[in-house]
Image: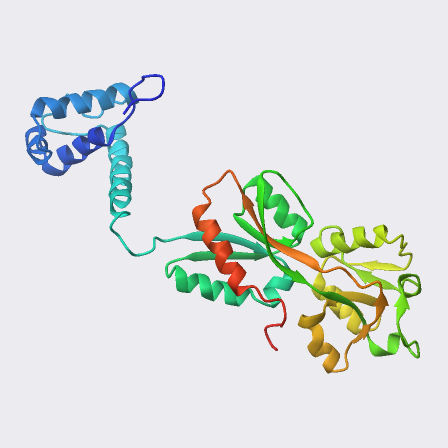
Length: 308
C-alpha cells in the first residue's frame, strides 16, 4: 500500500509474511504457505523493517528469532490479520457483529420507554452492549458535542450544525398541583393568575425547563415566586408535597391525578408541546446509529410510567 505522498506503509502481505515465518519456523516454509518465493518473503520483511525502523529478527542468532521489538510487532500483526479476516467475512457472514452503544436519555425517557428501547435493540442486535446514562439535557448535549457519547434523546432545546436531530415525539404538558394548593379557586386561570402561586420549574440544564422558560418569557410572564430544580423527580416530590404548581407530561402523570395526589390546573394559554429528538454527530459513522434511531421511533411512548 502507498500513502498519498507515495511513501510505503505497512501492508497485510508484510504482516502475513512475519506471522507465517514465526508460525512455521522458516522463511522457506512461510513462502510455500503463501504460494510465493523465499526471496519475496525476505523482501516483505525488509520493507517492514524499513518502514517501521524496527529490526524484526535477531540476525546474530540462527533461525527465525525475533527481537524484543519484533515480538511486540508480531502481536500487533496478529491483531491486524484478525481484523482483516473479519472484514472479509462481512460480505457472507449473516450474524450481526458485536455492537456497543453509548446512549444518553433524560429522566422522562428513563421513566417511560427506555426499557422498551433496550429490549428492541437487544432483539435486533443480540450481542449489543448498551451503556444507558440518565442525565440532564444540557450535560448530555455537551457530551455529545465533545464526542464522549454517541446518541442522546432529549427535548429539542439545542441546535448545532454538526449534529443531526431527528424528531421522535411531541409531549403534551399541563400545569398540576396538589388539590389543596388551589383551595377553592376553580375554573380557567390566566398566566398572570397562575404566577401568583409558587411555581416549581426545572432549571437551565433541563431541556424542558429551558423550553418552558423561553415560552413564558415570550408570553410576557415574570415568575417572581420560583422554586427551581433540574430534577424532574425532585420537582414531582415538591409538587405532591403541596409546595407549588408545576408542569408535567399529562399522559404519563395521569395516574397521580386519578389517585388524587395531583390535580390538573386549567390555564389559558395552554403549554406548548415539547418536541423530543434523537441527536447524533454527523462526522462519525452513522449507519448503525441511524438504525438505532429508527428503532427508537417505533419504541417511543411517553404516555405511561413503568409501573402503570
